[in-house]
Image 1 (cartoon, rainbow over the protein chains, first blue to last red):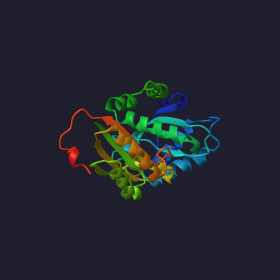
Image 2: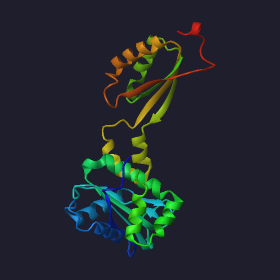
Image 3: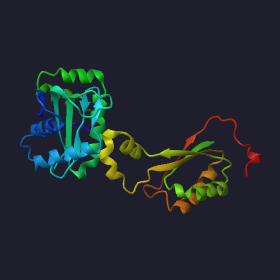
Image 4: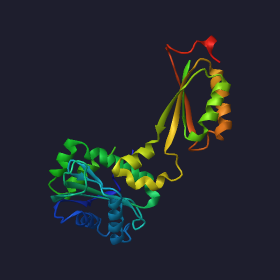
Length: 152
Length: 115
């Protein structure tokens, strides 16, 4: 089973962050990855995620979104998680703005792992009790650990 | 008695594959239009749209042929013939063939009526 540990750090999660729109939300989530040595070019990552959004939206419904992209601007797969202060439209099938957003970026060489983790994250976000716990997380550390607790 | 399942990725070879079935002694089969999981996820589920690029060269649709086989030797003959037709089932992307034991059936063509 693909695990989140090693890809999602406690510092890669935050709660209640403000975001003016989809692009701003993505930029702030990339920002959560901070000075990670795996990231060669944060701006290129934002562009890659926005390009992927242009292909088709990544809102999965029920106020959740999973923006992601393959990009060689990152050397290893990285994940950031945030709850937003106010919902942002990620084109979810039910039209609900997303307040729980998980961003995943990875090099093209990790497409297999990317696919498995994307499927795992989608499964977690489809679980109502998991969503409720994530949205109620008091801080980034608790939010990250909630996701990491679902590793096997 | 076995259920033989063959997912044929090279749809254009269906006619020759069915000829092999007849030659091997398979008395009847059901052919289903099917599609691979990769195609469905990449093209029908927006979240996975980013993986379309990884589908290049893959066959999006396939045919699934199911048939009940009474005698094991028919499977052996069919495997050899189908290998010839599709160029070796060991080659990735060609197709998947497997059998499952069948403990009961009804409605099959009578053995003496099989071609």
